Every structure is written in C-alpha cells, then in structure tokens.
Amino acid sequence: MGAYDDDNIFARILRGEIPCSKVYEDDDTLAFLDIMPRSKGHVLVIPKVKAVDLTDIDPAALAKLMTVVQKLSPKIVKALGADGFMIQQFNGAGAGQTVFHLHIHIIPRWEGESLKPHGTTMADKDELAETAEVLSSALAD
Ligand code: AMP
Image (cartoon, rainbow, N blue to C red):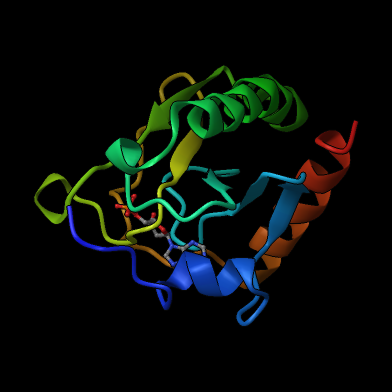
C-alpha cells in the first residue's frame, strides 16, 4: 500500500473540486454513482477520512462506512426494482483498484442480467442524472 495521494479523484470529489452524481451524504460518508456502472444504479460509498484501501482505515470509521453500505443497499434495490445487490471492493493495483481512496461498490443485480465489465463503459449522462434523482430521494430518509 502506498501513501495517500491528496489529489486522487475521490479526494477531489470530496473537496467539491469536481462534480459527482451524489445520492447520499452524512458527516462521515459520501455516496455517488459510478461513472462507468457495471449495472444501473451502481453506487460508490466512500469515507470522508483519508484511507487508501481497506487496510488503511480505523476500525471504527470502517464500521460507520459499512453501516451506511448496509443501510443504503436495500433501499437502492427497492427504488430500482432490482432482484438483489453485489458488494465489490478492490485493494491494490494488482487486484484491480484504480482509485486509491477506499470505496465500496454497491452493484444492483437483476436475475438473468450479466454485469458490464469493471470500469470500461462510460454511462449515458441523461441516464445517470435520472438514476441520481431517483436514488437521492429514495436514500434521503
Ligand atoms: P476501483 O478502484 O477498481 O474500485 O474502481 C474505481 C471506480 O471508480 C471505477 O468503477 C470507476 O468507474 C469509478 N470512477 C472513476 N472516476 C470516477 C468519477 N469521477 N466519478 C464516479 N466514479 C468514478
């Protein structure tokens, strides 16, 4: 594991320097749509503390992050009429990690629908905006 890079893309999103399709935020956590979704409603949940990967976060902060993942996932499934969800999380470039700020992928799944490959196809802008609107209101309470 390398040192935390303050200019990684998710750090810049947290500082508001670049936009994201935000669907949820609290004091410790931000959730937004993945720009290269593996399925409709693919959400990334990130801690606001600086952490490169799963090994680099205080257990109490990790517990808060996973509590949010647990809370949001079924609401995402319900709002989109999905059949279930998958959690994905990569540690290290060799394992497929490309952004070095810890993030948990919540990937809604529909029976019989295969996943798009990881991080390859850009989402349609209008579809992303529409999904962000649906999820923001579903995740608000
Ligand atoms: P990984 O580090 O392998 O878990 O993948 C990083 C994920 O972040 C990929 O699924 C990318 O599509 C996604 N991603 C990269 N840049 C952005 C961005 N600016 N906004 C939203 N998602 C992003």
